[in-house]
Structure formats: structure tokens, C-alpha cells
Length: 233
Image 1 (cartoon, helix red, strand yellow):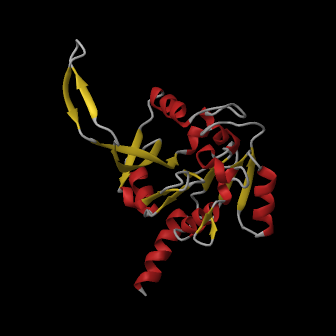
Image 2: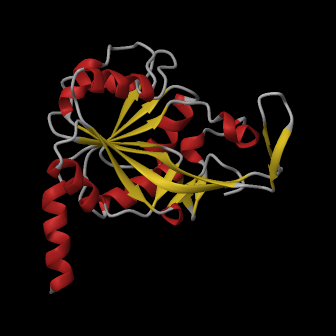
Image 3: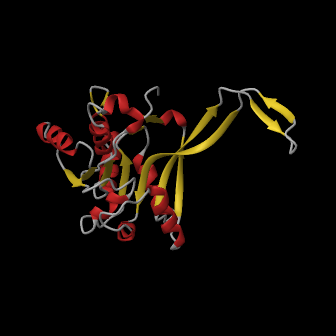
């Protein structure tokens, strides 16, 4: 059976690639919901955002999951224990550690390349292709970025140096590649993160580049990304 053989190859390739789900933040963009329950438990298609992510990774053979917790951590732990989510290891932040600080808690726990994903990032992506791209190019970090078109709701004014109006652009559009919150890391990057110290992902990426590491970008289309942190998406 061709489909079975393809699945077996994928599972063999990614079965030793763990995933860290970043779930320590308060989810301020969804404050009207996260006042009552934390963003890892935001409902997505009859399940939670976190379980949706875990299930999508399991389809590609990923077996081992870590989740970083801080805000409402006891509620989150109770939920996953009650629902018997397997192979999910809790990393409890003693304080808010930022978007990359909890990586330091993986020391002596991970030996292979590993995925990192924000708990509010829902993607339709071939993880095998992403992994192959990361390994083939020998990147220290590879991040997934979506092509995003932003349309301003207002006319944009271009002015001369003396303040005189040059022209008005009516509701212009701008195109960007936006980081969606999914990464692949080499295991040696963990050593660059101090344990229990606040660290932003942008600062970690700068540190890796400063030390000569290569950082790659894996582009996807905007339609393959659903951000649960945006209430109107």
C-alpha cells in the first residue's frame, strides 16, 4: 500500500524529533477569553489548540512533546492529566521567561533537532518538507514565515521635506513575510539559553547569528496559517 509506505517513511524520519509547545504566556491578544481560561485551552474544532497541534504533529510521527507553562499552569496541567494526553512533559516556568526563555529548561532532556511551536499557532504544513529543508541547509534555526498582505484602512500621505503634500495613496497594501511561531532548532542552541532567565526569540536569533549560526526561513502561503491569537481570523 503506497500510502502506508509513505506514512512509515515519514514516521521513521521524525519519530526522534521532539516538539516544545510554548504555552507560558497570558494570551493578552485574546484577553476577553483568557481572563477565564488560558490560551493553550482555546477551543479549535472540538478540541483545544494544544491538542490540535499535538495531533497534527503525531500524524508525521512526532512522539515526544514538552509544554512550557506559567500562566494558570495548574489548570492546564489538570486538564491534560484528566484527558490523559500521552507523552506530554510539563516545563514549569518559575516566572514569565518570554518567548524563548523556557528553551533553557530543555538542557539534558533533548539530544536531537527539535520543533518549537506557539500554542496559538495552527498550521497546515508538511513537517517532513520543513525538516528536510532545515537539515539540507544546515541551519541552526529555521523559522516558518507566511506571506501576509496588510491593507491600511486609511489614505497614506507622502509629504515633501517642507511638509507640503506630495500625494495621497488611497488605502495602500503592503506585503510582508511574517514569522508564524513554528521553528526547528539544532540541540546545541539550548546551551545559549540561561536557565530561568527572560529571553525573547528575536534576541536568541540575534545571539545565534552573532556566533556564526545560520538562520533560515521556510516560506508558506497565508492560507496555511491560522492564528488563534487574532480573534477575528
